[in-house]
Amino acid sequence: MKSKIVALSKNEEFKNLLGQRKLSNKYVTIFFGRLINKDKTKLNISFVTKKKIGNAVKRNKIKRRLRNITNEAVKNISINYKYSFLVIAKPSMLNNEYKNIKETLFRDLEKIK
Image 1 (tube, rainbow, N blue to C red):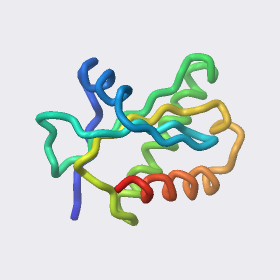
Image 2 (tube, one colour; image 1 turned 90 degrees about the horizontal axis):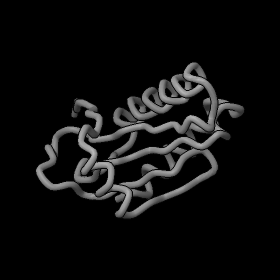
Image 3 (cartoon, rainbow, N blue to C red; image 1 turned 60 degrees about the vertical axis):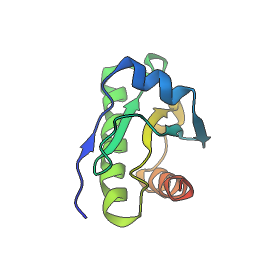
Image 4 (cartoon, one colour; image 1 turned 120 degrees about the horizontal axis):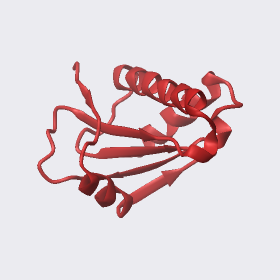
């Protein structure tokens, strides 16, 4: 099943997700939950990197990595499309290998059912 990945757009959606369930590891914190009026055929996911992590180049590198991992996850594992996700990156993402980050995120996304 080919699906489109859509970013969260409204401030209310972010606030709503921050008040729901969360899962954390050494690379990211994932907030997830159900949103009202969400399209069940599309994956709602947004990536956030704080300014404390580094300059714009470093923050964009982290977001590119997360988007790439999410695209692979959609193809390879079963993700629950009922949920919307907010992924907040931690500074440890910059200094670690892509493979380690990918394995950890795949494991966490599979836990969310």
